[in-house]
Length: 220
Ligand SMILES: C[S@@+](CC[C@H](N)C(=O)[O-])C[C@H]1O[C@@H](n2cnc3c(N)ncnc32)[C@H](O)[C@@H]1O
Image (cartoon, rainbow, N blue to C red; front, side):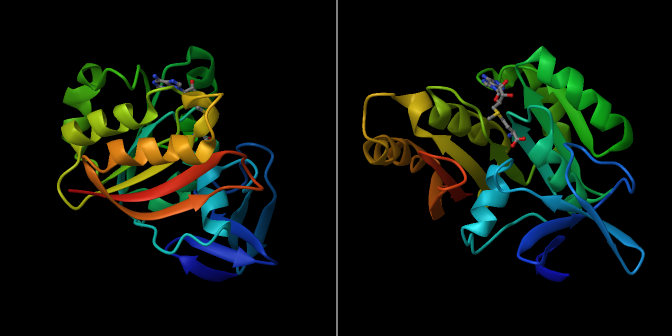
């Protein structure tokens, strides 16, 4: 196991994180033990953050103790690996609009105390403002399949991120426009993101996800 980012390891050309809850899988991933430490395989076909790492993301601001606001946490596949990385001192405030997803996520949260699940619309950050302001997130992570993905991201960043804080964003072109060329869609969305952020890195996610780009951004 070779550590490639804080808390993220490579072994046999696969990504792994140290399992915060030894013995428990989240989505049927493989487990492996080295020197009495259990690791979970992180599948880039199931997680856009893992795909971005495999596609050579150069910088990743996540580390032990990080505080993350996660929009579109769904059933917690990616969030469970972030939960491994940030450890017991860190926290994820995870927002999703789907009751069905949240019900599944709640099962994971029973063992992973560093995830706070919240049923809410990321378009309305005022509805969770008071809780998030207490957590003071250092990183905004977003993966929501909505037409106004960039607006949602900017709105949340304006409310919750300090200057210099980081954003991690997965953009899905077909959710924004199913007729325009993805490159045009991304160009237009990037213009909006530049109102609030500097773009540090942008990574196409194929072959793991088609017509998706992953961004590392820094708040202006
Ligand atoms: C592609 S899935 C996220 C997968 C997850 N990030 C992962 O990697 O494990 C997109 C999620 O966004 C959620 N979503 C869509 N619109 C939303 C909104 N307005 N507010 C909050 N969540 C939303 C959906 O319910 C869905 O769970």
